[in-house]
Length: 402
Ligand code: PMT
Image (cartoon, rainbow, N blue to C red; front, top):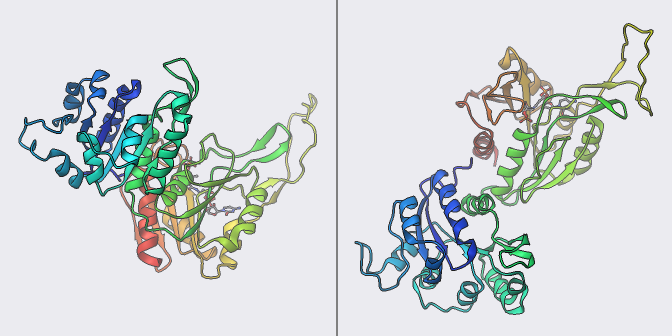
C-alpha cells in the first residue's frame, strides 16, 4: 500500500447520483490508507445516502448546507475545509456539479468549497451514458481538464437506467489509486527508468519450458512507484498475470534472449535500470518444433543447456553514466552472493532478498531485503510490502545519485 495518503486531509464531495453509495466504499478505502476524510454533500446527494452514514464512517461532521449553524466549525466550514484539504475527490460528480464547477458557479456548500480549494481536485463523473456523451458535459469536462483538474474516466457497462456505455463511476480502488498518485511528490520527473520484472521461460518444445516462481510483484511495484513519482517508465516483463501498472509502458517478453533484445534496444533512452526480473541463466540447447512424445523405452532423459546472455553484466560493461540496480535472489549467504554479483556486474547497488519463505521473495506481497551499495555500505529495512520497498529503493537512489 502506498503511504501517500497517510495523515492527509481529503475532502470527499458527493453529488446526487445513484453511484453515491459507492462513495461509502471510497471513504473506507481512504481511511484505511491513513487519510482523514471530510464529506461534503449536495442537497440532492442526501436523497441517495444519508449524512449519518458518512458521519459515522468518517468520525467527523458532514457538511451539506452553506448556512448550517451546527458544530464548532460551522461558520465558514467550506472555506476552512478547502484550505485544510490536501486533495478533493468528487465522487460521484454529476453532470450538474461538473457544469457548475467548470463554469465558476458557487451556489451551495460543495461548489463554494471547490471555488476556494487550491489543492489537487479529482473529478469522477458518473451519469447516464447519453448525458455523459452530450456536448455540454464533454465540453465542461474538457474545460476542467484544461484548468488542471484530474478527470477519472467512468467505466462502461449497463447503467442503472438501462442504457449501456460509459457513465459508471470509476471503481473506488481506481479512484484511491488516482488520489495516491496525485499526492505523491514527483521527484523522478524527467528521469527515464527501465525496470525488468517476472520470470523468463526457456522452452524445450512448444508446450514445455523451464522457469521460476517469480510473479512480477516486486518489479511491477518498482515500475508503478517510479511512474507515480513522475518518471518515464518502461517495464520489460516476463510472463506474469499482473496488469500493467497505470502510466507505465509495458513490453511483454518470454525468454531471456527476448528480454535482452528489448533492454539493449532501449538502453540509449534510459537513465536508470532496475532489474528485478528472475532471468534464466541457461536455456535448453535444442528446442523441438513439435511437442516431444514420451519414449516408453527410455527410463531417463537428459537435456543439454547453453548459457543465456547475462543482461545485467552486459549493461555493466556499457554503463555510460547510467545508474544500474540489480536484485539478488538467494537462499543462503545473502551478503556474500549479492556483493559478489554487484561487483562482477559493475552495479551501483543490489537488492538482496532471501527467497523460499512465505513472506519474502517469490510471490509474496512483502519482502525482506538488504540494500548493498557499491561503496561498501549496506542497510536492512524491516520486512515490508513490496510497494513500500519499491518507494524506499527509489528514495535511496535519489539520495545517493540524483
Ligand atoms: O517477482 P516476485 O514474485 O515479486 O519475486 C521477486 C524476486 C524474488 C524475483 C525479486 O525480488 C528478485 O530477487 N529478482 C532477481 C532474481 C534473480 O534472478 O536474481 P539473480 O541473483 O539470479 O540475478 C542477479 C541479477 O542479474 C538480477 O538483477 C537479474 O535480473 C540479473 N540477471 C540474471 C541473469 C541473467 N542472465 N541476466 C540478468 O540480467
